[in-house]
Image (cartoon, rainbow, N blue to C red; front, top):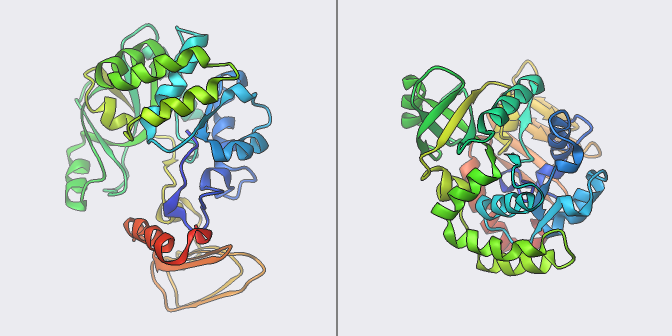
Length: 348
């Protein structure tokens, strides 16, 4: 899934060039390229599909020249994760009704690829020939309020039946989750067979099943994009979590620990980045004075001088600069709205 705009990474992530197409971690590869590389040891390249907004088609082709056009699924508009996933799974089912599918965001950071591959392989084996929907949960290291949580029923073995889903709880509740030992972070990574997810879609999202069943005759043909334009004009804006995972009774979670971060915000980038002795993360031509626990990003051709800040984000990219508390990520929705309404689209 590579269609998001990454608004909480503004101004580095822009509508025309969002974070999944950038080398945020300084590895020489973009987040999308790293995600594809991660799966090359698990599946043939011909079996990798990218779902993205149609305005990013050129970026995907430029960064992943090894893919054929049929592997790039172009959404005409944003409709959250349910239509995106249904489109991909129904297209894959046309080629292989017995396929097993891994669904993953393209903008996550994973440091232990070996352990990640291990849990994905075990999950693929677990769903083979079974009516099971598996989601990957991350053992929590802190009471994070920016992630969703999955409550599971304690049992032996890797795969545990899911009890509840909770989206981004308040701090007090997040602490209770951690203390209970029954909750993991929701990584937004799913594993299932196309037959199992089709059954769940027919039951819980029958309107979406009808929409994409009607479109499937156009898959892998020159009329596919026209059919998808029509399909998306009828799709609700709904997440796969709310549409299916929270309602289905055959959902299991596999508990993982592979150095995961969703890289959803500047604060999450700060958490996983190497810090100097003042606990600052600096990727800029900068001079720091009496400042701690800050994250600074800017171009090398401009000098940034910072004095007396603690826990701040200072970032410059293109025609915009932001200076704010780095943990105020919930404010970014307001920032983006105000920029659009008061300053203009050119700053987004």
